[in-house]
Length: 80
Image (cartoon, rainbow, N blue to C red; front, side, top):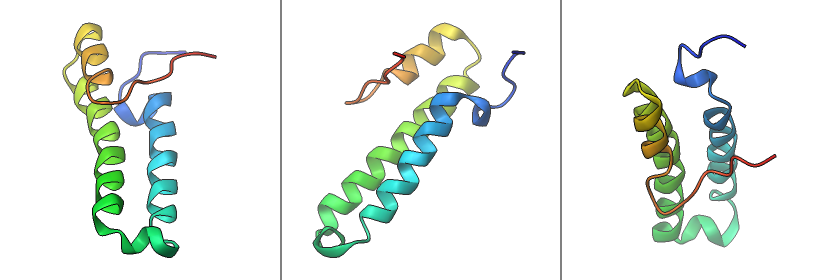
C-alpha cells in the first residue's frame, strides 16, 4: 500500500462517512426526527468525526493526525 494522498483514502474516514449516512437516515425516522435537539446533536457529532480526521490529515504529521483523531468525546477503535 502506498502513501495516502487524500483524507478520503483513510479507512477510518470511509467508515465514519458510512456512519454519518446511517445517522442521517435514522434521525429522519419516527419520533427521533421530532426531537430536534437530539437529532441535531447526533448529526453534529458525526460530522465532527469526519472533520477531525480530515483536519488531522491536513496538518501533515502523524503526531498531529493522531491528536485530531483522538480529540472529542469519542475514541476511534483501531482494533481488528
